[in-house]
Length: 133
Image (cartoon, rainbow, N blue to C red; front, side):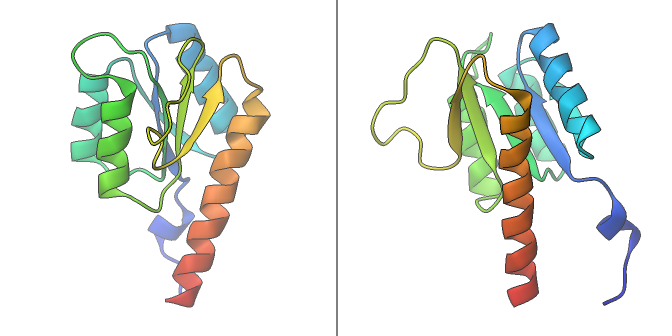
């Protein structure tokens, strides 16, 4: 199989959190694991980025300032890329039955290696699916 530059590009993860410290820590952990982390501080910014770029995964806190919360960001992401991993996080919300149709939920605070493992598992599943087609 021929290798292209897009095959060699680091997988990109959209990191959506209104807390700059959390956003920076997550981006750093993802970069250290070989991912490109694209930050967004609001749901509106995240939707703009989703419309403009292709992402390999999403990390999104549920509580966001403005009119667009993490659920809306995740719903949009999963509609466009249903097979790519989406991670939702919150320190205060619990998951209502039926609310989490795509992705997984992590209660804050969580270990960064746990988040990285979610994206690694998603990348492995996507690679296996590509090989089958």
